[in-house]
Amino acid sequence: MMRDGYVARWRGREYEASPDGESMRLYQPGPGDDFEQVRPGRFVRVLPLAELEDVAYVRTTCTWKGEPFIVLAEHDTWLRVEYTGGRWPMAQALGLEEFDFGVYQGWAPANEVTDLREHRV
Image 1 (cartoon, rainbow, N blue to C red):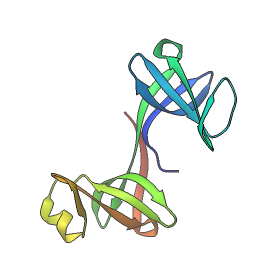
Image 2: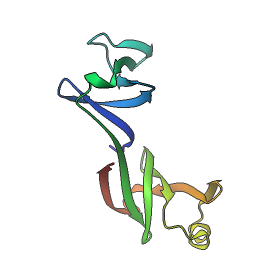
Image 3: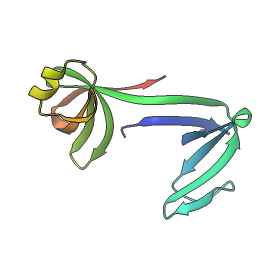
Image 4: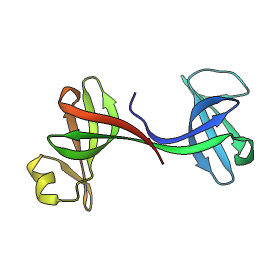
């Protein structure tokens, strides 16, 4: 599983999360513990930050074709990656699309990606 986003620990369990002012939205795929369904397979519960045991940002990094990337998502046998090497000629040589000014992304075959690591920030 590739993760890129907030996580929060509550009652000894880690949840996908998103900040909401002085609160945090916790998400899970099924009902329970007063989570409300927001769409099929997606349930949310909003808690004050003080009730959480831990909050962190998780990012997955990798190397593709010898260059550093962040993994944003996965689909089938592909990974959505964002180049972090800071050299636009290399980004262009890799065939990446300019997502935003100076931000280059693309799809990499998962079997070509090495050095997958998850970092907590």
